Image 1 (spheres, rainbow, N blue to C red):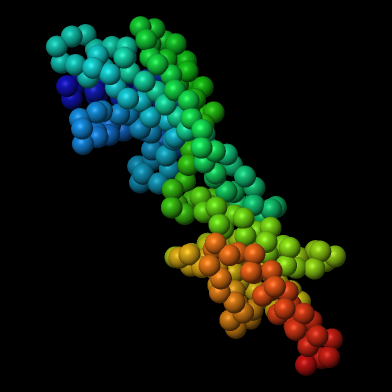
Image 2 (cartoon, one colour):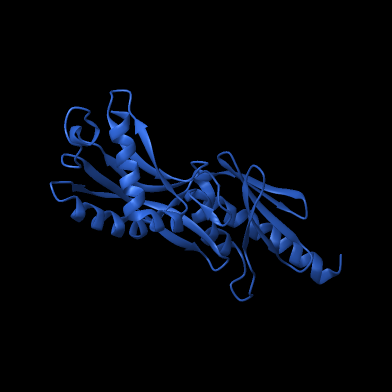
Length: 227
């Protein structure tokens, strides 16, 4: 069985190797506890993955007959890359949809489909593994909330930073006041010049708006008074 499975990996590499190299992934055998065998596509550290997987039918893993792809099935989920403002960061969002491809006698048709699916579906960067990418929906939606809390008649850049354990939004307003909104566990922690402003649960991110506005108003008054 193992020999036939390794042959399937070799065949994939032969047919779509350059595409996988460009995406930074390789095929890998994965076995379910119930004995089902799949081929998944991922980087060596398993932090960059393709949303495509191939269930191997009996013909692809048999040791008693000529190996075939017939009876195998390829599935993939759909993900969308969404810009977080214009700061260069990307939110990778699962669209909650998928499709499948039943593999028949014609393996060439399957490999043609695989060559289209791999670049078409792209890759997902797991668990903050790639700078500038996040899968955290709460973090992504906080951008517009933070922007809504700031004066819309001034150009204030809201950027993202990745720390060792958390991601954060950073901006400066008024001049000389540096803000951070750190996402720690299930909370967004706001500081201005290192002083605590607020901490809200990610389920209640809109509470950031009055908290930030109130401190911005206070700081602006102090600036105008020269204090």
